[in-house]
Length: 197
Image (cartoon, rainbow, N blue to C red; front, side, top):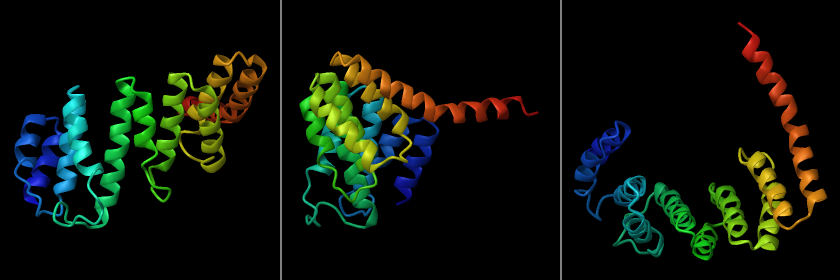
């Protein structure tokens, strides 16, 4: 546990080589093993080592939940597993492997706090693949199920992009007009705050 804490401290300071040295010493018998593997994957992703990052994330995501020999399970385990799946989706998306990204995003369970992120990012992957009907459905589902998510403005923009890409110019304009109307009070408040000494 001390090795993990030293690794996290080094990570916060940007000393990635020191992080690796600490995390590599954490064994499968530690309750922090899955967290250490995930953080090693994040470091590799930050370095642009997508293949190595995916390998670390897969080690977590592909492990059966009842495999107690591989991972000592506590409350953090399922959160780390969801983060690993989200990471795999993001890596696949960055590599333009949109079907793989879609697959990884949909491995995140419905009770996960990361489901809104996964749904939104799956919609982006399908948009970039030009699977516009799928992207449209995913964006609408996201906005219906998670209307207060911090991602709602981006999802509304994406909805407009989908319609624009499908040459549905009037529908696209409706999405943009609605978004502007929702954001205008926020812009007004920001201007007021900015002018207030």
